[in-house]
View (tube, rainbow, N blue to C red):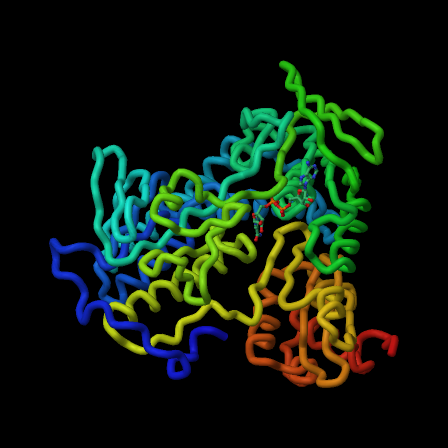
Length: 494
Ligand code: NAI
């Protein structure tokens, strides 16, 4: 809930009544202009804070430049290609569609540029200064910035660290971004690989794996754990596994990647399953085994900002570190590494800093009931709240309702019928605990569940809400009804 608790929180200690006069120290220096940092800076600008953002790369960070946005451009084009290939069933026969990867990559880049220039415009409109360079924290209220414009010292009443995360490189798999690629290289391929091996069956590996499968690649996944997308509700992960197998993905679970040997014609990948080594010949290997927080080399040790053993900065609910003038948000703090989590935390931090400077009461807090997760596989996965296992572990008397995507008229009419909806509730109170969707449009459908969870809704609330027909959202209502043994368009199990 977070944002609506204004009255309940104790007032912050006043540090200054008005924002700094021009020429004086900044009220806020934000390090990093990803979806955490730039959003925080815009909100700070709206609140009248004299704000500067320091970015060593490009505005928009990983998400806009080499992550969320460009990957979605490739993913959507790959789906268009798939639909064109399979139109015959609907009576639509096209000439053989042709993939021109250089053109696709160029189009993807044009999407990125539109968005990053939009961010630049918004920062400017909100009177946020932007400086290019690498920042090092030199004191509780000072930073050094080294960039194309030389070295500059910045003094700010508050510092907000939003430096994000970097791809983890594993021994034996050195990125050359041609044959052995991170997600960044995977978005720049100039040819569709005939065989793509993905190391790590997590979010990035499966999103890009599905995109390239739709573009015609044979895809092999090497995943260390016994489940794809570890952390996602086991039934949903299993459902995706079944769909991918049917689409001829080669899935190796419980498999540990060992080495990639690049040759002029390809790359040989070695991995180990239950002590036995296996090798595969691939055109490209994508390594997506997780990301680590960018907290090294920022000078944090010197100024006494606590960093835990895994490199994360612990903060309170208002995103303040142990040094009162220094805040941290997004991937360098605990919780899922997700853009929307970072953005929300950026708003919380900016509002907290503003209230603190103006001596106002402040209720901003990052105490969200749920942070939704979306995986843009084909079909998509979207989750909100507890998984079934987590709900049981938390001691709830769990009840589950499911509904198949194939039971929806709208899904049938659009020819996308894989997947299911799963609603988890507490048997005694009927409180809604979690919603998990595997299916088309899951990324947009989940928001209803997030709102329901934030508002403390019951499963009955979800079931009683009139959902428009014919839409994919009816699946949520039907799954909620199924939990009570009352689904209309399915034979109820209970
Ligand atoms: P991930 O944590 O989702 O998946 C990494 C996978 O690699 C895990 O399943 C892990 O068990 C496996 N693994 C680790 N070491 C291995 C090894 N040596 N051999 C085989 N498998 C191994 O990390 P991923 O996909 O790299 O994504 C990084 C972050 O970016 C995630 O936190 C994710 O939330 C975020 N992200 C979010 C997106 C979204 O919200 N749609 C899209 C892309 C990334």
